[in-house]
Length: 266
Ligand code: MLT
Image 1: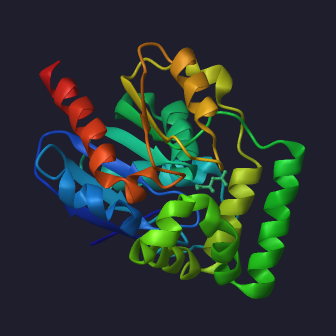
Image 2 (image 1 turned 90 degrees about the vertical axis):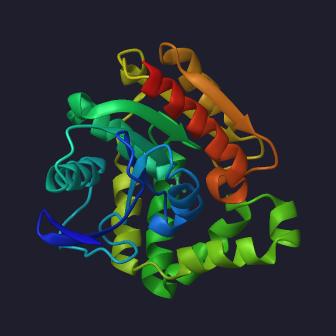
């Protein structure tokens, strides 16, 4: 499905029919197919909207610089287009950075937060340099080169060795993204603000999920968020690295299902 949002066509999947709306925001350099196991496996507990961010998947990429606020504005535009007052906002990794931007700008539109394999802090100086290096690599060699660099950090070595189908589809998802989308996101991540001071102000019910073997954003970051966000619950999924929802969908879905059921009961 597509909706016209801020001058471009935003592609999204829309499954389930429950009262609770779950907005799932993919990470970098991915697209909405990241959430296939959630849009199918959780459609009995929520209506799930999984969009492609601008420049990714089947969404358009208008000209101009991108910030985390740009993505947040796009998503708010999508909620408006679909006539939704609020949503459970869930994001993985860069999707978590966007969830923070969304909460900062539109707290009234957030019914609850799900922060997966993400962190509150901004990039270090070294991290910012890494973004510039990756942008140069993407411009020179295309998204395939970024995929090759990132795959070993996305999944556990065991999954890469033993579940060829999962590794291949994650690699293909990264390799098919547009250079403009990839570079735009790298700059947005490089320049994103530190969300740490905001954590203590979050009053939305929050579920934090991470993979026990995530080396890209280690579980320690999730523990810091759990300690700073009032009442937050942390689920650490065994045998999962950065793409915990993709690598261990049953465990991920169980954590989200329990969280949504509780939310519905309140
Ligand atoms: C992501 O998975 O969204 C990104 O790799 C996160 C990051 O690079 O900071």
